[in-house]
Length: 477
View 1 (spheres, rainbow, N blue to C red):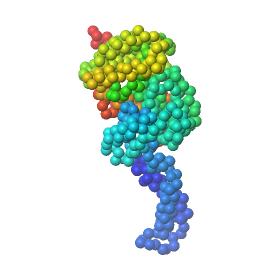
View 2: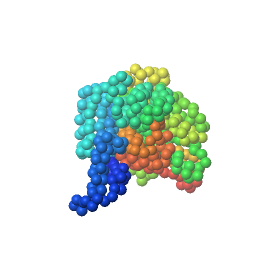
View 3: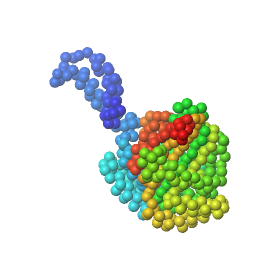
View 4: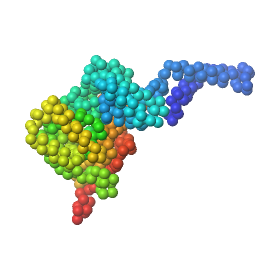
């Protein structure tokens, strides 16, 4: 039944109900009259079926039919930004149902250019009946934001930096079914978002925070690694490490630089010996990481071995909390050209942490360095890679994902999370506020998400490698 187009499904269901309802007609005695060889009782029943089908359709009593008849309305905050436009294009290309995508931002001029870019890149996808528009709004103004979100099916929030969960609060109040953001600050954002869980359940809202590439996709990779280790017979999970590499911002601008700078003033949220123990090590602890599984991995040629330094990604706290590690967690990121890593590490060692936490200073430094970043981006190929490693008793699992574009990977991951939640409205609907690792605890949901992420355009490679300590010793010998 569900394989039929929605209108046919509704019609068949209505016919079935109507036929049952007109049992009294079929039970009447035959009068001997027929037209074109048909029993009059059958004709009467068919007429009643037809009438009830029309009434059924006109009243839109089938919830599924009503949803499919109207376009799914997605409000994309930060829609005029580089990540926002990439997310919009991906939604239009991958959604199986018609979408009404509303790009929302503060600048009318940027918004019009963003709309033109999305329409141009979406191309043939628009033939499915998608619509794209722009609305000028300051999302920080709850009074202006609420009318925009009212009646929306989904809010995708890409407009950082994320200081307070204002948009989540408004989305819950307006009873928006699906909410997704790409936030990363813990104390001032994610912790506060988790306190809204009961309100989200009451509003029938399924909200997902920190759902980009990292955090987001990386959290799902970690849960899959943990599952493979435990399935192999490990008694406990010991350590987890998240390492990231980005080369070229893809024009994503000063906001990403500002977020990085502010992070240097924050504690890195890590575990030590199975307990939460934040460390003031952002911008330090430089080390080298292999962003490939082996030399046959395409990521070996495209990314290779890179320097990374510590930075306060929230997954170093939220994932260990969820999978119950007994050892340590760590997190780091690096960039290219390599000289940038050494410059940043030197600056962080020279300047006090309080200065990095000062928004005016970090923003000024972001704008000051932006022209230099743009200049070097012309000579450095845009690339993105993640390596997630989980160890347990006797086992180690490594996941590596590489992509041709940082901004597109973030945007695609967020868009796929949104499409996943929209799809769940038809079945496994569980309102509340989630981090990605909680969503990924369900094996079926995790498998579906990994299939989505690994098939996005621009993916270089995505895979896992599970080894035992005895295998590693034999390899070394």
